[in-house]
Structure formats: structure tokens, C-alpha cells
Image (cartoon, rainbow, N blue to C red; front, side, top):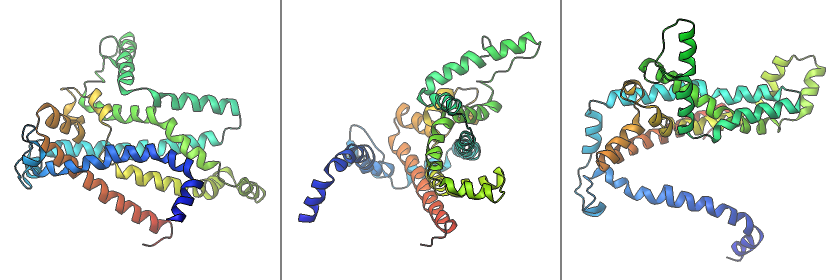
Length: 300
């Protein structure tokens, strides 16, 4: 007890700084877990959570047997896979390129321009897309018309929506994500580069044998965190870009849950789907963490 009191006195300020974060997770993450039982009930707002009748696995069965199951699961996995393949390496590549820049002013300018989109909401970004890509008044389509080319319905064409989702995600997040890797790069001992240069190692060799191993742990950590949310493709982005013409290729679990849970009031079914998604993410985190530990020479 006395040891605890001494620690509180010594690190009281640090514990106080931790308190808002702990309260956030307690209120918005742990307390709502009580309502997971709604996934196994025919939830009725008037009856409340306690008096709503139990239905067991019925909500899960309704989801798995639904006509939209294959479509929304397929769209979610495909878009998540595309984002993992293209969006995840983008900040690493940008950080490596910025790290090689010798001009401080140019480096700061590029950093500022690349991470500013992170502070724009998806509503604003979609407004920019409309200004550039709208079928009638969009700048790109006006240029196509000027060159006597056919107009392209970028925002309503189902074959283009996934490309648009991934590309805008990269543009919005690449600069902000690069900050983490730039911070990791500053932790690499400069003497390693000096020794490698004296040994005649090329820039490519230094990148492969010094730079990438130096930030490997950060890359693995970010990959594990990314895999934990592999089925979270970004509700705000998808919802704002979704329309009846591209819904076939862009409707994902999160937008489907929104329609079923809030618009149709089928809270039990929506909760069941959310629980299903959380379990998949949990399994992927455990698997990715185990692989990462083995890759790093650690065994559970």
C-alpha cells in the first residue's frame, strides 16, 4: 500500500495525463460491451435489454443466410485487401523518400502538403471529388470534352468506385502515417550509415540493410494494428461515396449495419454482425502477433 502511495506521489502528473485516455476507453469501449447480449436477443426498445426475448443464434443465422451476405462480405474483404496492399506501404515509401531529402525547407514543405489532407473531413474531400470528377461540371470531364473524349461518371460507375476509395484513402492518410515512420527513422544510429559508406555500400544497400531493419519493429506493430481493423474499411468514407449506382461494389459491413440497425431498427441483427466482425478482428490480431513474434525471433 505504501509503495502504491509513493508511486502516486512520484508519478502523479503522468497518471493524471493517462486518466482522460482511460476514461475514454472505459466509457466508449468497455461499458458498451454490456450490450453485446443484444446480439442474442430480439431487442425491443420498449422492452429494454433485460426484458427482450432471447433468440440464441438466430440473428447470426439471418445474417449468414441473407441475400446480401456474400456481396457485403466480398466488398469488405476486397476493399480492405486493396487498402492493405496499397495504402499500408504508402506512408513507409513517403517516409523513406523524405528521409533521403537533404534540403530541410523542401522536406518541411512536402511534409506539410502531404499531411494537411488528414485534417479534412470526408464530406469536404467528397466535395472536392465532385468539383473535379462530376459528370457534368467536373473539371476532369470538361477537359475530356474539350479533347472530344467521352465523359466518365467517376462517382457513379461501379467499376471505378473501389479505385476511387483506395486512392482517396492514400491521399488523405499517407502524410499523417509517414510521421510515425519518420520518427522511427530518427532513432537509427547515424554511425551505421557512416560505416556503411566507408565500406563502399550503395544507397540501395544502406536502405536494405540499415534503414528497413531499423524501422522493422514499427512496421510490424503498425501492420498488426492494421490487421486488427481489417474489416473496418472506413464508414465515413464509404457512406459519403455510396449511391444506388455503385452500391453493388461499395456496400460494406459498416454501411449495411447502419441501414439495418438505425434505419430499420433491427438492433439485435446489427449487434450480431458487429460482434462477428470484432471476433474476426480479434483472431487476426492474435495470428498476426504470433507471426510477428516468430518473425522477430520470439516464441510464445
